[in-house]
Length: 141
Image (tube, rainbow, N blue to C red; front, side):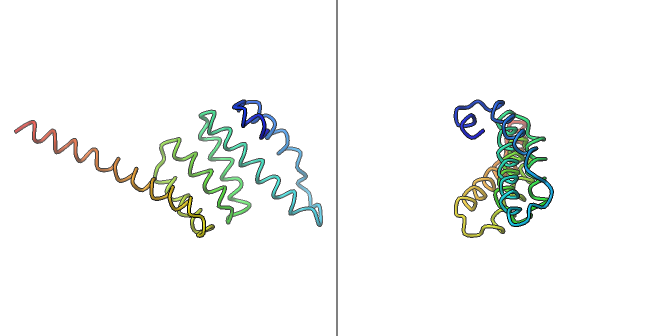
């Protein structure tokens, strides 16, 4: 799946990730359970990234949420869901997810930068309607 994703063959990568995720054992594997859990997390997050790239933000959000439900401190899942929310135009939800990601990984400077950029984007969008009202008012006088 990773090779296909890098080659921009996203639908094919999506199929591979889905196939592999379905085959990860769900019953307790004893000493190996942690490895299988990590594998499942990575497969679901990669699948979420594929869905986002394929413009299916709803499914991408759902997959990232599935990871968050089972691993609430996984900052990668919050980051993936934030990107999917952003792609869907849900900026406030994206900011909430990035806030959780930063809380889970406070040392990650990249997340801090992304969060600041998103805050600026939200602020610029909230100012535009106000500015257009002002310019409409000035043109009326």
